[in-house]
Image (tube, rainbow, N blue to C red):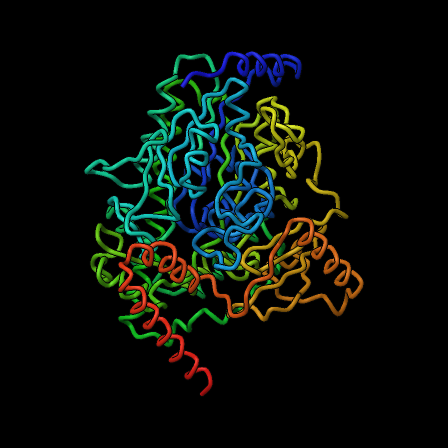
Length: 587
């Protein structure tokens, strides 16, 4: 599709009015990893080989206090719109939203029509806009990339999928949904591997307008390291034996390296998570199996980094690299849940995948890292994906290539995923919408421009007295200055509020509510204001995000496909399972 002439002219005019620095609009590459923990990247303390991301970190700035949502779709919605997920339609992702919340204001599970994406605004201003990778923001025509500002697109639209072939990774849907430029894609290349495919498509998209003279915005959303963990064998082989000491040793090594790099304060303590098993208590066979899982995880990350290097090499060959800004982040912390923990997940996976140690990582094989390795992937932080502890929502952010920015620096300033869209617009010299877009009302962006910090003109992004709220699936937080009020629901948390100084105690070890009672009460009031202003709904009793995934799959996908005679049978089975579990609890 062609760029509207009026939009292109307006973009050029704004750029010229903004001055010489904005007139040369940079290319922008937004790299989104899936389920990477805080210390997974080498430049953040990890042992996995990520030389290309490390090189970007050395050229730019690492943000060590950057926060997202604790699951995929809410983060992606805020990343592209700069609007709180409860106001942009994704108060929860479709897979984990309780049935009583579905369709309520702010809980569509997909992008609402009341927001405009950064891709639309950049495209209106003369940018070519591309996406390749995981989308997870809706299948409706008005929510597919062509209607959300992307000129060319190849996407996997669901929460995840197999990395070797076109098939779902769990019993959430009978098939995986792929789209190219808004049309269903029914086959993938025979040599398909997700990270390779996404970068190849990104290069193809950029190459299609190589000589247009216009800048581009390329959003590459990898499936690495979402389950199932899969990687080319040559990468897996490199890590053989690397994790034989277990997760506690790795967690300590990463914590120490993060301190050495200056990402966290010296002496940072680590919470001992109840979900982390005793490595020494495992049998040798169990240790070998668990170590192989982490070897595959590391290989998947390195394979992704390798593809990032291929993209960088292409941009250098075509002389576009020097005028390109790169941003890298993860959508949430490492994945600690186990689909095998539920009966339906176990039955489906046993039927569709192999779990033998010899095949882990390959085609037809299924692997996870589980909660124990996840605690190492997020080291030295607390909790992981789905939960509001720092391990679930604090992730690496690297920004490189910004004109006039400082090199090889670390910013400890609190930052948020809603800051990305305003920053990209500022880079391009594009104004944010003032509440209206193309004649309709839209939600204003709430994030802040990071360029002053990147260029050494400011040390902080948010004033110390400005609260920033967060909620997902009942797990909640409010940030203010260096402090964080935190509540995690069972089974990971106790459902109570706790207060932490996350600048000095990022592992959330020391609860300060007794020492700072006035601040504790003020933050509780601040969170109440946030929840009320953003329409946050209370969670139903007994809610568990992992169990909800399979409940929603059954109710929304499979029951409608059954004949009427089959529905009572399924309900009878579900009732029997419920009564059995209730009887066990009563014992």
